[in-house]
Length: 364
Image (tube, rainbow, N blue to C red):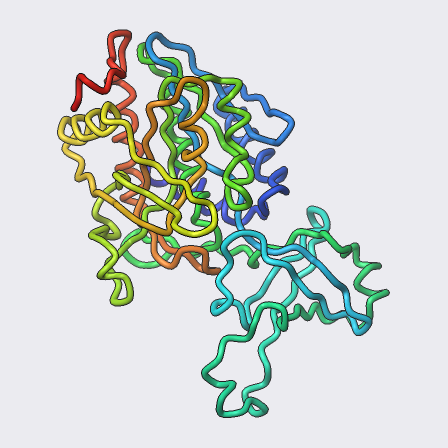
């Protein structure tokens, strides 16, 4: 299992898929599902879903396939390119980063976000973050005509240059671990669901537009009308010196369960999980002997916050894996956490039968 998840994650991180431009990722995922004999379908937005029949409450198990990045907003006469941010891109992590301008598979254009020459920076500039509006991308092309001839237009999607690297102790570093790691877990779950002989009906979905407006999964949920929704995404690892005060989530310490999330800025939304789901995963972890870490964070938000409001309301929970360095060009996770998360999901789904109660009074 670990080797399969590693292969899927490493391959997925090399496929560019900016939010709103996920088509290559969707086709890759559809190919992986087809290779194992699992049929899937897409909706107009590009969400990809595979249905596994069963008996009991209907479950929507999903992770987003898109990644954050940039949009070309202006091409200067000298060929330098100005960008607009798409998603929560940190300005302080951008200077000197390599990017990929996506104009078509096999035709994508590499570039670099310029960093002012050190020899020319003033004393005050050495300790400042360059405002995003002042940054530009250099592709090596020398004028606007050359840039346009290469296929680059205003509106073209731009992502961090794809990279996937194996580090020590089964840790993986690369672009868009958020949330290609969740997608890799879902691929493995599809393998398990395909061969099961009992359990609830499950709609396994890879969703779009999470990094843009968090609502790509919402139209799909409106069609599927799940009773239960389980979303897979990162959990903020707090085991580095800069994160210690934020919580108690350790890389390699096992999967995580969110007990509280709230964005706190702009989009005032979040998820407080349904008590039936908390009880389910705590019992599943105990049964399987899997350590289950707990998370409560402000500043974190997933598309589950909108899915949970579908229909009469959905019994919802965010599950995930510890991850370091979120939304930077190089994120980091632990393969063992992904394996444990997969096993935990398998056990938990097996605990949802026809009589599974979603009545809050049975748990509180």
